[in-house]
Length: 323
Length: 259
Image (cartoon, rainbow over all chains, first blue to last red; front, side, top):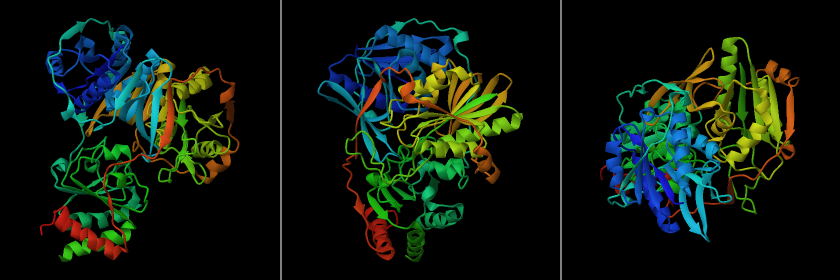
């Protein structure tokens, strides 16, 4: 029994979101009075194991296997299944990354443990572990519990916990040998690649004017571009605008685009779905214009303008140009 | 090539959502329903594969109440799907993705699909795992976040989206279950001919209550409005007043314009 947090590797380091997951797991272990174990898996993982050692926990479990050199859904799901069977944790905790979305559902099927995905908070209540998740286009919250006595697989949304909250320690390492054969990995992957960045680095912009599907049609893009120009801002967009081809992919903010934290994030016609919000909620100030007073973006905004962007945006542009 | 596409009828995303009185679902009164947007990309990808190969069958699989699921099913058939499986669920609605996948498994396991396509996640529950769960239950290879697909004899090559603008191609043996990312294609509108033709297409109905199901693995205990501790200033008034206040904020509070 206990909490098992699995670290994800990015380059030779721990994925930033995995540190947040460690903070979540440490909080859970404390509230549930449980033992915390940290799992690292991969090939040549000494650097990762060393980094994991410095995180406070009962132990670091290291699984080294040459077939884990590259990520594969089959390989990672099989190894995680074996670890869950051997260690019988109460909860397996990870960050809600693209990799986790890919392989944790398979672990759920192999182990019969539910996958509670994209969680924003945890609390222990009357002996139950309760996880909160956003639902209905991020407009409502829901409490979720594991049924029966089974293990639960939980992924935490980006920034649900702060990486800076991670407690440090000097944790002993236990190597375990697990078996995995080439035949079990059915996929063949090629080298990852990046598509054109267009020379735009949204992460270094001080001011971002970001546009969502609320603008309705691509003929309205120039109107927002004028506003961005008048404000000295970079223009960005949420995914639906990119999907419609109204702006190029390198202008996308959100889980599938860039994570930004400008001085000002000025959002126009963006509703504030989770996938977008995770990419911009670190902004110092947020101003949002939307016609829907219930738009989740307003929950996050410092300033909320409920109104017709077709009226407000040109007037604001003009005021900026005249000052 | 036999392709199943999982489609879900979900509330229109910019609906105003209120928790139901029992706090286990939403107040459905004024809500309009539509095909989950991600699923329409999955359907389009299946139709494109069938058209490119000049052979095959596209079967849409939808669970939902008899009052509103058929409209979404008809739309899929009008776009070009060949037939449908409708799992009738009148409510209370299942919220455990493992249980939902199990219901789908019981309903289609005898069909021997080569491919299952699903949308990345649904607007309502957003669990983002049903397609992969179903694939794993059926022993299929799985992949997520597909931004392009190519069929190669008994394999599928998938361009998978990674984080921060990175991508990776991978090749999976068939049968495979692949979840489709939005923006992979441009979903078509049904043609008039398609709409007429859809009326003759087969919709097989299965009652959820006839299936042999055990208890689910996770349970939603409460649905409610999330409180936030963020102080938000609502800028009221007509557009001129709103713009004047915005200028003030930009100059003196956020200070991005200089004084």
